[in-house]
Image (cartoon, rainbow, N blue to C red; front, side, top):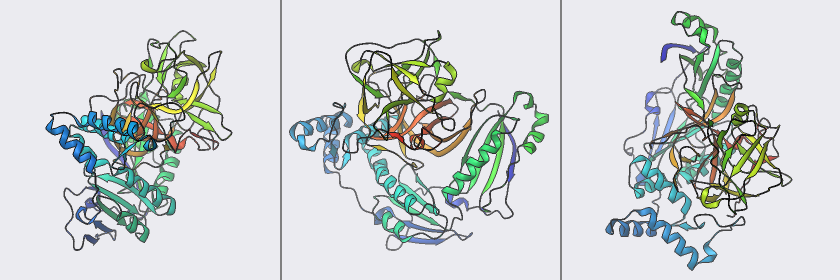
Length: 518
């Protein structure tokens, strides 16, 4: 049960963006010449590039396959799969490199879109209850939007103020602390969808992240706190914490005193503020589970991300899922999973198993001592007499290996992503997709030590959410790695893989092992 008492910490001056900025347009904005420039009451500016004025994507092959599937009363996904495999056979030169053995889908493009992305959009369509071609029309451009977002963040790190995909994929919003750069307008014109450019917001995403993390560290030191979740709103500049007090402080008569004790230092930027709300139970649970060892054995020699992990050398069997394989700057390899799997089990060694259709003699993995204390991931190395070959592949669904070509950085809010976990997905080809509702979350799970940073919060529209045993599993879209499963319960949190090479992650000499040419 949430408590309505809320503590708000303002700086000397607090200015809030108008509600208009927090609501997506339900239809394209009227304009002259395809551009509408608006000065909002608080001085914030908006330029809208309407959908009609933007480039139109050309997808003749997808349109033809869609029409053929509709006439045959069939689904689009099998048609795309067949076309990709036929293309790979007829035109081997169109197939990207596969140095670690063949993936489940041949790495080819259809109308410029990777087959893996088209398959993921089919899963998005199934989970959201819309036609496959509608999911392609709505969300296929998120890859282009992410590239624009990354370019603007790297070029204007102190000015970029966040990017969102809104209105069910129909509108992108790109914000800036000060004036809208000419480069932003230039890049926005290349996107095949409506784009809102917001200027003079008064704060950057960098400032929001720094204030969130410093406030989280301060909050984590308070004896009154059992657990918390913190995030920020890139439209309003509000940093919010939902706090679960210690058991002896949950009495309603003590709430006002608890809120007063939790007062944090206000952000230095007057356009930002902090809000704290109390709740009896965050219902934030680690997605590890006690269970039975369900591993199998055969002859596949590879160690892939997303494999099946099980402890048990000390008696109790804990189940988790593998994340992505990582590489050190000197070429040494390891794999990853959730840090709390090690913390809860107390086991130094775990067993790795490939998926049923890619089975192999199990290998033993040992947790390393450089597991992150700031992020909920850890590194595992092979030990024992059996050794499998590390690959740049991961299981993107049960029995569906694919290559990682990119380690994603700073995901766009509202983008669609997918996850696999050993508990949630037990049938052939099963996985789940949803949308990112917050790309930067801090949290502490009650009863588990440590303040965790750098999480991605995702909502899933399908029937499956993260469950015990899914911890450590991969979060991705297409061939891009995005995160590693951390929590379930009321909130699905995935620690971002772009934090792996942080000083407080695995170290600056570690990163997700990718194959850019695959």
